[in-house]
Image 1 (cartoon, helix red, strand yellow):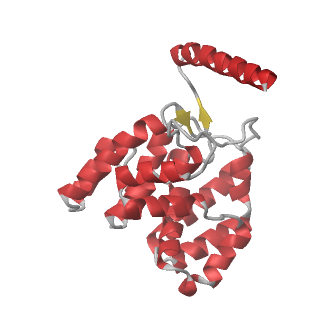
Image 2 (cartoon, rainbow, N blue to C red):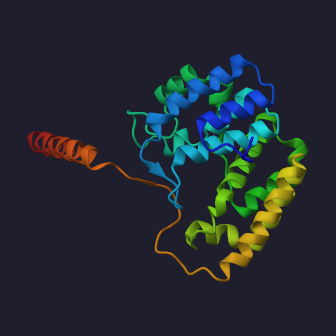
Length: 250
């Protein structure tokens, strides 16, 4: 293979086959990818990278560590409850109906990890607590943290975090935060990832000296094609009119 980590579904399938994953497991990942396409359509990272490429990259990093398929599935869908569009219950992060939908598509164990991921605190003092309490943490929480570490690694692929300096980049620029993440990766028995992150942090810190602040937050944004906007806006206007009339008649 000519890539370090997959960025497309085809690369991820090639990688999993090269790592001798079962064809039944690969089929589950391919089905999950088909579920992810409409959920993250039009969504891009702050760097401009299509969001679904980030999801595939996270799953690929987990596969490179020979993680179980449920963990890879959770990596592929890790942002479902925070960024995904289910087509219903907009604004809710893991409603009962959303959870059942995801369970039906990726399985109960993988869905539970996605749900726990959406509720994982990730500030410096939380990471410090994970390091201190690692041996006492539940197994599923440890698994969720490993998925989050894979997510952190994926953020830096192709210089994604140093394309421009923004709010998100500033959060990771704090050396205390970096040190805690590296310590946590070691504690999570993932020294290869800790080494990769250490190299990325060093390049990132050096690059920030020469990168100006950007106007954007650095977080993800949705970009709709013009046709979708033309179809969506009239519906929103009609829905707003109906709501106003309903309130007036109440």
